[in-house]
Length: 271
Image (cartoon, rainbow, N blue to C red):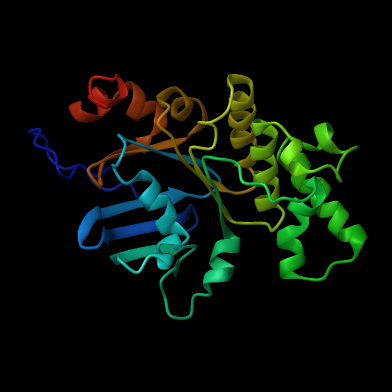
């Protein structure tokens, strides 16, 4: 755990590290700025493979910025500068030989608002497959069924695969987007407030899906919902003003945080 920026009279805690066999993503002394304005400062943390890690913190603290940095979405913004390292399975994602298209296949991302394409349910899930490789229809059908099943959507849509994806409910659309991402077999799934626009029943389905998916891949969740982070994550990182305040097992962070600032945020005394 890292306790920078703190005025509390405590000794800095060591950064929680995982072995190479356990670690999927490793972030070291990462700094990012927009047009010279710091958004992330000296972040260092390891994210373990086949677990759910939640990023929590007040609005503007850098949660979504860090999430987008992991699959280099900031490349599209010329005002962004960064330093430090982010490694995926031991490979620096900013290395000259890193193929960004392949990185974004391996690190899928789901946003707050569902964004299905204006095409059928089937074609939404098949979209990435068609871009990557030519597959026999039977093989493609099997992958689509597997992806929709993994996203807990197959039983609801298996008899209407050629229906427009836009006719699905919001919760179904979000699970469809997850299925579309899963179809190309990513190593990591980044989820940026995936249930914030959904009703309670749809939210519970997304949370159950997150818990089930960690057997297949590594998940990173940004959420403002403290109860959701406590329910679905194995590890929690608390960010404030672009710095990592506290990071550890979720049970520990929520029930016995090391820093008063963490407790104040979790209990709602600061927002």
